[in-house]
Image (cartoon, rainbow, N blue to C red; front, top):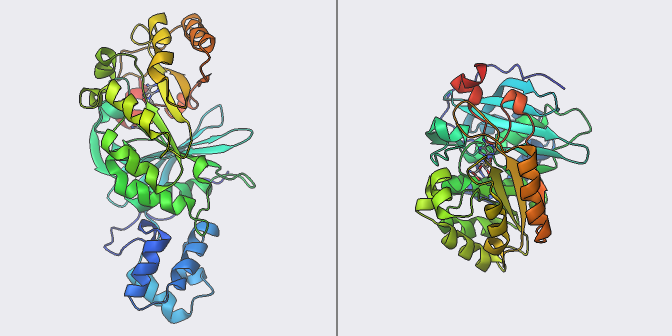
Amino acid sequence: MRGPSNYSPLAMSDRPNLKDYSLERLRECFVGEGLPAYRADQIAGWIYQRGVEDFAEMSDLDRALRERLQAEWQIRCLEIDRLDRSTDGTLKAILLAADGAQVESVLIPEADRTTLCVSTQVGCAMACTFCATGALGFTRNLTTAEIVEQVCRMREILDEPRKITNIVFMGMGEPLLNLAAVSEAIAILVNPKTFAMAPRRVTVSTVGVLPKIEELLAVAPINLAVSLHATTDRVRDQLVPLNQRYPLDALLDLLRKLDSVNHRRPVFFEYTLIEGVNDSLEDARRLPALLRGIPSKLNLIPMNPHPESVYRPPSDAAIDAFLRVLAGAGMTVTLRRSRGDDIGAACGQLALRRTGAAAA
Ligand code: SAH
């Protein structure tokens, strides 16, 4: 593994960033500036397929063009500021933006895949009561370039021949409240001429911003994950304040109708198990009926405790009992032990170090 890069801190610049543009839009933009569209394809190939971010190295561009591009555009926008490695191999990076904003990404190498978890906002406005990012509040949206850049910077720290195989939009922020930037980033991930990722290897998670879900799924046949966390509005209102605006029935009704637009992909439900809050056997018994009619998979994640929250995970016995009820009802359910909890990289722990809370 290579260490954080030695680039000097980024200077603020008003030049547009190439990574803010999907290939289609970059072609249009180049044509508008009197350049042939194929120049956009060449440059995108250098950046995304070959990892070259210096115009001087783009050898199929003539010198005059390289100098012009250098004067008018920028390519890089985040640098790794800090990298922590968990005992389980998970890597958490804090990347620094030009304005000093800190962006967190988590790389999870496993035997058969390498997943990158990207952030879409600095902080989060959703204020979910069990989530450390929620406690931090919202600072700003990330740009498309800053989302894509997390992939560019994080793939550089992998040892050959390991490659990022899956991308999950499950870092800091609510992707559907930054949908324009997220959609453009997805377009760059899945285009065969840029990152060329299979759409089914990309997953976007939402707390349930209902009016935006269909728009997201129209971008590409990616996976949708929904943070469920409760079986009643009373409990979900308390855990996910957005539920007061878009309650369970409305959420599940919409997902039931999605089947045709969701490219026949199952919905991935995330359910953070919290002791004494949403872990009762009644909850387990309610789940199958609640999710009936929605092709789905359920991921149970025991609450990752952190000092910002009074909530705790249930005992192993309680988790087992919960699982048994679901399995008995024939549900597809997996228990996810979050990775990287020793470095504050686990689900819901992003932002921990910065608040200093983890030092306690
Ligand atoms: N805002 C989106 C994207 C973030 S995904 C969303 O919430 O879906 C991060 C996932 O981690 C969400 O399912 C979230 O509910 C879960 N999570 C947050 N805090 C957690 C904690 N302390 N323990 C376990 N899971 C947590």
